Length: 186
Image (tube, rainbow, N blue to C red):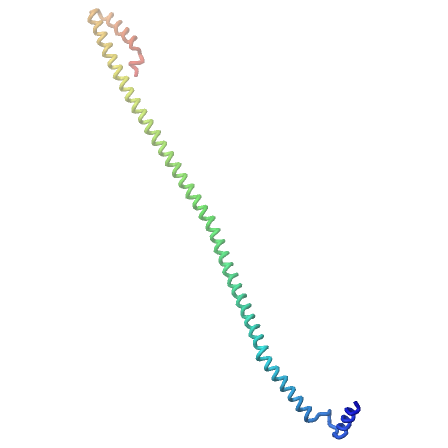
């Protein structure tokens, strides 16, 4: 250890005192260290920092794109929601229109059925009236036949009896009683 101290003392004795102990070697080493640090910085910047920056930039672009896509999707979803709400409103209107149309058709069918029933009732009444008229004619024909037979019977009695007018009036009254008053009135 003594030899290292002795050499240090010799070196320091032979040197001239300097300001801050700056010598050429120290400056040279400092400049070289600075150049090495700058070279290392540029080297790391080129091979390490730039790829990291590019990766971060790509990630920012990707996130920005996803945010833009999410905003566009949200806008599309809002538009679809508005369209669906309009369709729901229109569906309610269409349902009301369909129900209204069904009511109109039902009312028209009801009116048609009622009209057909009235026509059928009118036809039935007309047929009944025709049948009643035919029945009246038949009864009238029967009454005429009856009257003819009564008249012939009465004529036969008048001829057979050849009687006077008082007897003839009695026969007519008797015949009318047999026929009845209702036959002559109808």
